[in-house]
Amino acid sequence: MKSASDDELVSAKKFVNERWNANLLVSHANTVKYGQLIKDLENAYTKGSNEYPKTIDKAHVYFLSTGPSRLINQSAMTKA
Image (cartoon, rainbow, N blue to C red; front, top):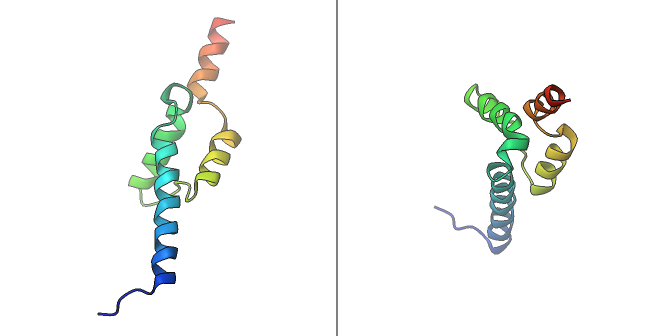
């Protein structure tokens, strides 16, 4: 079996670190605000479609672009 070069190890560590941080952001997101979005990601994954963001930047943009959960919006509308 061939050993990985130093460059390959650095690249692999960077790849794993990016994925880890993106998953941490998603898994620790405010479930009241983003619960439905997280459920949608989980459901898609169990159906074989991995839609989880691959970098922390993409995870951040995902939450900013999709906005808070529809449940929050519906709750705010019923109070008005």
